[in-house]
Every structure is written in C-alpha cells, then in structure tokens.
Image (cartoon, rainbow over all chains, first blue to last red; front, top):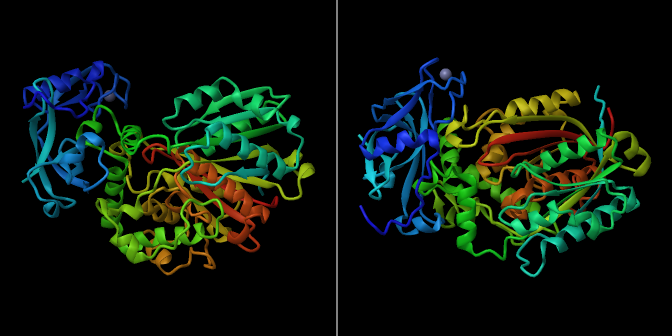
Length: 136
Length: 390
Ligand SMILES: [Zn+2]
C-alpha cells in the first residue's frame, strides 16, 4: 500500500461498484443473471444476453488458465514505465468469462499459454484493490 | 452479376511523416485540392464534404464539426458537411455516410482525412493510444497498451497456427518494399528480416519494427454514383461488394480472438461482387500489426489457416510477387496516421485500379479486395472493387 500510487485507477460505473467493494474485502465477484444464468464480465447495466436487471454477485473460484499473454519491455503507458518488464494476460476464468489482468511473481519465460493461474489481491491504494494472477 | 451503385472518381494524398509545421487544415486543403484536380471536376458540383475524426486533436475535430472544410475549399454548393468516424474504420464509416448522402440525392461527396501527431509529445501519444485502445475500468489500471494488446493477439495466433516470428517479421519486410515505391511513404530505407527481428523488444513477441509508428498525413477521395461516374471520368473505380462485422470493444470479449468475425464480412463482399479470392489481383489489408495482416489474408481466402506466414516469407506478396498485398506499405511502413490508415489504403486501392499507382503499379490490376477496421481490432469492413462493371 502506498500513498504515492500514481497509476490510473478504475473509475467504476454505478453497476460495477459492488465488484470493486468486493475486491477490497479480497472477494472476486462476478455479476450473474438471475434470469438466464449468464455471467457478464465486464458487467453492464443489464444482462447482455436477456436484458434482465435481476442479478446476483457470485464469488469466483479465482482459478483460471492463461489464454494469451504479452510481456511489455518498452513503450508502456508513462505511469507503468518503471514496472517494465511486466506481463499482462487474458485469463479464462473457471466460471467462463475471460478477463485481462497482470501475472505477478513469475519470470517472463515461465509464463505460457494454457498455464493454470489463481487470483491474488493487490491493495494498490487504501481504496482500491486489483485482481491479479499468479502461476500455480 | 454485380450492380455497382457507387464509384470513386478521384483521389489526393500528401506525404506521410513528421511535419510539425503542417497544420491539419493545410493537410486537408492539399489532399482535397489534389482529389478535385485528379477527378477533373468542377468543385462546385460537390455537395457533400465529410471529414474524418482525428485522434487526440480535438481542435481539428471542432473545426470540421463547425464547417471549416467547405468554406476553406470553396465548395460553394455544399449542402451537407459532417465529422464522421468509427476509429480506424473511418474509411468505411465515411464511405457509408457518403453513400447515404448520394442515395439522398447528393451529387458528389468529398471525403477528407487529416492528422497531425508530431506536435504531441511521445508520452502524450503513448498515453493517448493506451487509453484509446484499452478499457478505462478493466484494462488501463493494469498498464494495458496497444502494443501489449497486439502482442497478445500475435502470441495466440502463433500458438494456434504454428506461425513463426520470422514469418510475422516477413510481413514488415514486404510492407517496406512497397513503401520504397511510394513517394508519399514515411519510411524510405530498405528493411531486412534480421533488422526486424533484431530491433528492440517492445511487447512480446513484437519488436520495434513490428509496431507501427504514428505519423502526420492525410488523403481524400471523391465519391459519386456509378451512373454519374461513367460520364465524368475515364476510369471510375466501382464498389462491387461490401461487408461489415463488429466484434467487440475489449479484446477479451471477442468470440474468436484470432479471427474476429472477419470472414463473414469478407464473404459478404465477395458474394455481392460475385467474385472470390481467385479473381483478386491485389489485397489491401489494414492491419497496423503484422500478425493481423496474416490473419486477414487467410480469412480473405488466399491461404489456408496458418499458411499465410510461409506465403509472405516466400515473397509472393512483395513487389513482383503473384499476390501483391498492401501496395502502399500500410501503417508499418507508409505510416500510421490514426483514423487515416484505412483511408490511405482505400485511396491506394483506387489509384491501383485507375493505373495511377506510379512505381508501385500492379500491371493490369482489375479486381481488388480491401479491408479496414478500427478500435482494438473491434470490426472488419471489406470491399471488393474494380475498374469495370461485371
Ligand atoms: Zn440474462
């Protein structure tokens, strides 16, 4: 945790505030439609399959697989320059949705497509926690 | 049997590169002047003027929105002017709007793109482009950039098809060979496979020469109905078929990340034209990153899935090859002018079919397939064009 965190922070929509409240409690929540069971991540106002407004937040297992990844050595957005190299990846969550995140605690050469990963919570400021992943 | 409704009768273009002293209005004025002179028409017969939305330059967008272009260009009988775009897909969205105006009774529509990037700092550009390509809530907080996004796409495409990084690099080499034949191209030095592979790693597996460079530039074209075009110029270029598909905003939401529904847009364009890949003399592919050139070349039906890399590596798409691709050098070598890359390729398509492509001319080109797309690979728009009606 740092008071000098100068990277861009998520600016939640009204319908995603519960997700970000969840990450602060180290809970990884997904928005599931009560009507048809569809999980929307990112969430939107209504279920993008059936338009139902009725939903519940389900806790994700945090398990997933790397669908693809890229390690950035140069040219990252200015606030991330000194973190280079860092690896971003698309994670196929066990619950279905695919999300973008960062792989932490691994060397670039250890990261492969298909690798199993699990969610970790990074408290980047006192108000914001990001979901990241590590190899298992 | 294709019944073309629309045709292009003239094009104009300015040199692409770093020209901080050249204002967007100057770019737009020259591009328009050249297009009008190229078509050989009376400027006062133009009654619609469309400007492409610029990336990051809100002042220029405001100027276009507030009607600067018809006044500056002396389009005395202008009925409609507008700022139009959908990211890099603007060559298509502009054209769709132009077609709408022509269907609504306009006579001729002038479409203009102008972009100046060189007055922004590298930091502003890196930040601006990261923001444009990525989701502010779900991606930007992680450090997402356009190059990382493209690296992920390249990594997955290589994984699925066995395409090698050398093969991906060969796309950049071919693009440079074409750019060397283009007077308006930004990059004027030959490029080898070793240079592409040996340049600095940006975001794996993409090296510096695999990532496009932002540049100042602009181009223009004049569109009218096929009927009118025949009476106005010797060699109009007809749009024989068109298809479009939207895939996603965030690349994570693409149903098939390494194909992005491109094929259904391409097939619709072929189908409307009554033609197929075997009939095409040239493919003008807007990709901006080399793995996407390969993906789209395969989706266009010129190679089986996973075989485009070998085809490029063997030189078949380079000048003198049997299937020329990206004859202006595309974003990778002509220069990336933001929303203008697709328009530049469209203008080059028209030049090739009019026999006006100079040193890059593909002899006897009759049929051509062209695509553009925008956002973070969000969509595909495909056209089949020809200098003759079928
Ligand atoms: Zn639903």
